[in-house]
Length: 132
Image (cartoon, rainbow, N blue to C red; front, side):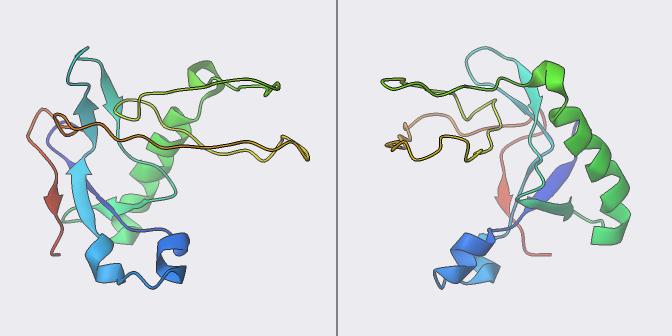
């Protein structure tokens, strides 16, 4: 997988807000390295990744399905059970996350913070805008 790029597209939410779909295609390394720890991880997910650069959607589907299954194995998951007063943070540079609406009627306040720093990178280099 080193040296391969996966093409990521915007979500339906972005489209519903009037964002031009052609502006939301970028290719990223399939394998990324955390810039501080050096840990390697998969940078594909079923919400954004549609195919590999240079491959069709049909050609990409079997390998992507395998990678999605690997990334969602129970032994790699943390499931948080929300309690009043909880504060949770994660590092998007190496963690995938998915929202599960299991908090009933409780109100949660969500804030996103993006820090300036090195972009996610793969052993082969940084991401690039996909023109294919």
